[in-house]
Length: 282
Ligand SMILES: N[C@@H](CCC[C@H](N)C(=O)O)C(=O)O
Image 1 (cartoon, rainbow, N blue to C red):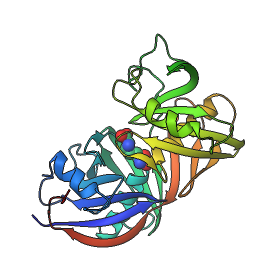
Image 2 (image 1 turned 180 degrees about the vertical axis):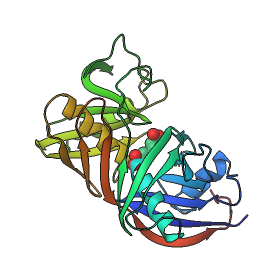
Image 3 (image 1 turned 30 degrees about the vertical axis):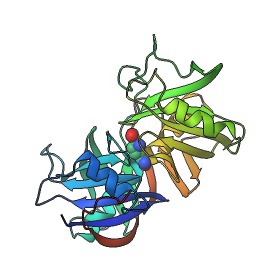
């Protein structure tokens, strides 16, 4: 099997992009994991397919798979790469705004330049049933048992589930233990992307994310949106915030509940390649 692909990244969150405009997406979960392997495959945090739309009001559909082969409903850094990929494929001009369809519904992208994209990420949902998150009622924070401690978290959906924990120090060793425990916590029946956020001021957050299905990543776009939304709901940040992640910075704008949230950041091509379908040798 020969599979042409583009390797891209959005501030270090890296992607294998597969062109499925003419032929249907046909990779098995095992093949996705083989391509994800950073030693015997290509390596990626997410694999993204670009396909014809299912919703006729959208120009294209994109599918999202994590490194462990599991599907996701949304990917913030990935959708910026989709826009830049469409530009390179001659499908989207600089300055254009277009609606593209994610597994969790349409989002609107605007190509600011060949490598910079703004995305209307939709309205964040704090409804526990939508996330999904097990809770008696919607709240801006929840106490959650993790081992023998109780952690305070925010929980929301950006089209995918997020837990947000405010911490005084992003380098505390405990985060590396807590990240995987929250990501697979029983109160998130479909798992969660776990963001640890340090509030640096009303316009600046620092964030590290342990992603469902991919582990610690250099950046998570929906994680940056989720952290901003939780802190804005709690009145701790302004309408426009920079979110610094290990791989770079995103700008997130949100007026508040009921409004859509906007994300701006880079999308970078790394190389074009062809996966030859070799099974890993281990
Ligand atoms: N890196 C992404 C999020 C990818 C999906 C996530 N791991 C999930 O399973 O929901 C982003 O930039 O948003």
